[in-house]
Length: 146
View 1: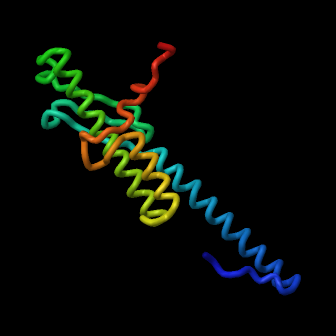
View 2 (view 1 turned 90 degrees about the horizontal axis):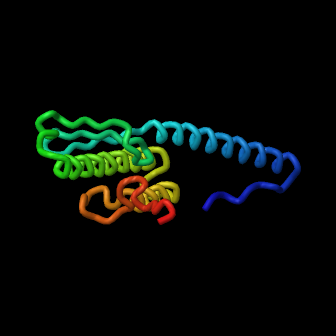
View 3 (view 1 turned 135 degrees about the horizontal axis):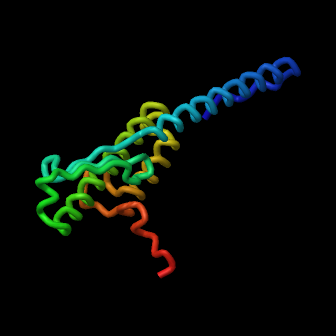
């Protein structure tokens, strides 16, 4: 917890409120800067020793994809599987970057970091285990009215 605020006199109360206000402004400034940093994060992943590479934004949405000519010659089904593998690797990467930024700014044991960990794990699954269940590719859980 924190210290008990000093409201023993009008002057003490004003000083306490001014300090608390300044602390709140500083926390808000830090949170805004942190959120801006998070919003710019990108994750990178590859499949088949780099024959397919993917870049995702922090939401997990694909923003860049490269498929080598050699990989493309393998046929649609194999390329599709490699694309999914690379995108999922990129999603785990961006998830790790989000967690690193959260731990650095708020501390590994903070409630903010705990909430981010739950969100990242729910969205992308385990950041360490590629086979762990997660929501999957963005939009995979949308049934578009079906």
